[in-house]
Image (cartoon, rainbow, N blue to C red; front, top):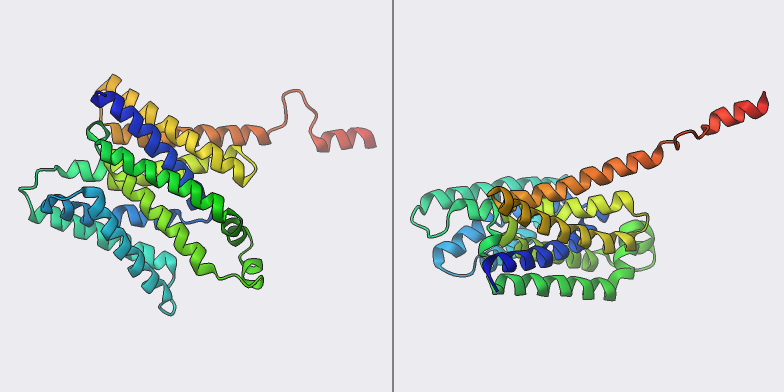
Length: 279
């Protein structure tokens, strides 16, 4: 398999997996947390490259520490999840930038951490993304009822005697795994676009949460393919191309949702029809 075919396969696998997990991110309103996690894994990736070990492994170790730190900050009185995410986002990214600057002799350029390099992904990167995607589908299939009960009716979920923290921990773990598996393709900065934008687009055009779970991976995979093809056609970086493709899908979905709310051409608005009957 050539490098370009491998990049297309990676785009499909990583895009579909990120889109599926992104559906949970959007439905549970954890987008800011996912963004903080993508930025805060940056120092882990830099440290892994400096030590000569797998970059996703370093990002995974960092993500575990980050989730623990955020959970601790969120429990502090008068603080919360949003405060924790904001602190971790800035601190993590700053730590990564300082570590990168202090290690000028690293074999990997900073741009590959920030915007990814899907044309250089390995079979191991694709395998990792595939495992994460399959695991996400299996876990949602097994615990989907509780996940969505907790998402749409948290008060009823607690009243039924269920604890929220196992569901929240499961979702956070899936987000962290998706972020780590997306790093080789789109980097620390752009991973949030591939996670959130396809799911946000699907939510605008699909009325059910099950529909979002099916449509978001399709949009994510399509964003990856289009981004790779555009990057080859115009000789530009693949990571930003994939992020822009995902954003374009969201813009189109937003336009379609707006058009749906407009009255059909030639149709009498409800208020006018009522006035006509009265007259």
